[in-house]
Image (cartoon, rainbow, N blue to C red):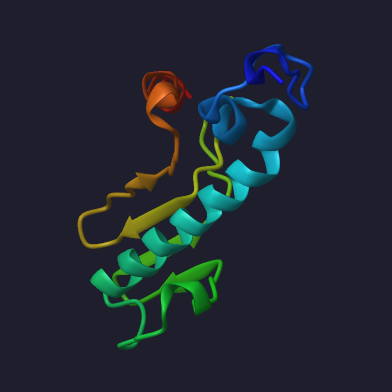
Length: 129
């Protein structure tokens, strides 16, 4: 059977590995979210370790249990919290926000895990939102 003539689960003609892994709307939602959350969890753990919000934790990344809020006297790391600001924005729920009290900054960390063919589109989407 000709592989290119098959229909995918989302009823599009043709099949490529890129479409199956990252482009198929039927498969994308669950697989992409799971991959995104695993990567974001690793970044969360490493950020918390780097800023000494975890007390010398040596937990392996796949056993790491996320906490919604980690804090110390000069920093707070929020996981998936909404940001309340004075004007309406479409996207106000980044993956992480690190509030640094000593210099009153709050870096926003928003994770994307695209394949190579989606890289530019994903980068533009993250910057615009």
